[in-house]
Image 1 (tube, rainbow, N blue to C red):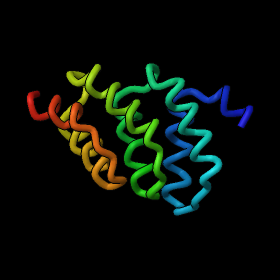
Image 2: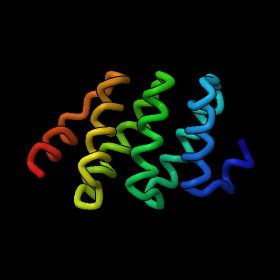
Image 3: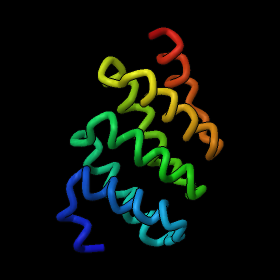
Image 4: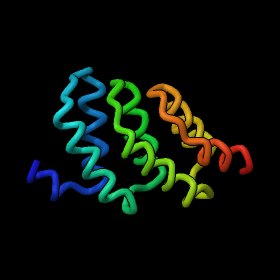
Length: 110
């Protein structure tokens, strides 16, 4: 996981998505990537935030801390997310059973 310190937002997202596409579960890696994503979430663009949420949901990897961070970042940058991004983020939250009333309320008032 030391190498992960050098990954930027796109590399983190791409790695998570690649594992998801081949349906390879690696809980240890996903836990480490979750921590790195949270640390660097300020550098993620809306598409990268959406993709990482969808990837975690698709493999069913629970990471409450990551989904909390995604919720807060999405609320903070709500105007930069298009409707498809928001729909996918809400879907990802629902898929993993992560409650985020603040995010759902913020989106409903957009």
